[in-house]
Image (cartoon, rainbow over all chains, first blue to last red; front, side):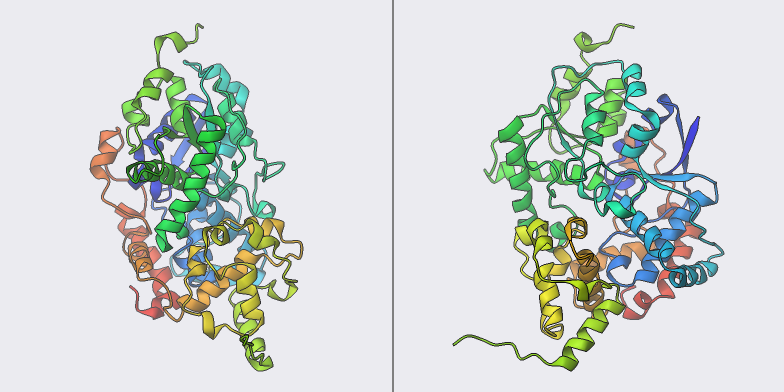
Length: 303
Length: 171
């Protein structure tokens, strides 16, 4: 059985623990063991240490990577921002021997040392590259055939491609999440703003109206071009933006619809037959109807 | 009558060095082609001093004039700019170097203070008491992270306190 150090970040354990539960259900079911990285902290988020001091950023990030190193495991993150922050910090340390020395001096104060032996992967990479779409297909209890999904890969698994361990063939036309969603049986049509930013992150904190403006373009593009049954993402920040912002826009009369949103492993967990009250229980944008449809008797795969 | 910018070479050299020292190493490679701004979600959303324009102002020696501008804090760190830049400037690194210049003078939104304080106290920029929510979905109420781990919190506090961030009086 393959094994990864599960790096949770902040959004998932505190805002969307049903996503965390979906990890804990789907990975063992697909032959991947998860080991908690006890005491892992924030990556640290872009608005914190990376905005103040590079060496402090690299020290806090490397401490998280070291937790995986100490267990001789690679690290797997469920949040795109964490993936970007940790990958870039690793790159900045390994690209500059002087920085590595300074970071290890900082880590010495907490009796740790960064070597760089642990790889940084994202949940979508492990599912696509290590588990594979064939194995996902074989494990399904319910088929999503006939359902239409809009995908939102999110920025930080795409760019800057030169520092990432696993990357898309063309980061402006990403296919990893598309193939993972197609493996569930769903149709995944292209839409023009596929890799556009959702407006979450620093933009939402700095100017929520600008953030919502960007999100409005994206959600209208999705609705008007492909009118999907649900949206699926592998970024916890994108998930929160899509989930929180649709009710706001609807209340303001900017949109007259909402589209259910899932983190990919949630919809995968539903297709594998896991209990929705554990793996897809928390959302502001209603999704009960599509959950009932996914786990309906008629979709059960005869084995 | 149009407004002209008076270029002062000392001011330009000092500003460029400041940003390069803070991590914007590719700054001088910029040829102002605007490829970065063309793909920047922050520019699209309407932040006026991001990517090409931010680099132009730094190269014109206007660092002090824009220290209060909040555009850099609207940067999503998405790195589209880095991917498309034909000159290897890595504009996102310049934007973050400028943020560091601002942050070290405490020129950032007060809304950013909560996340720094959370990071120091719990090891998490985003933290809420989610014990009930976690139990509801069948998870142990306390996440296995620094949030409920005193030793881990002390380690993060040591790293932050012994850093330039510790000298700013945020924690």
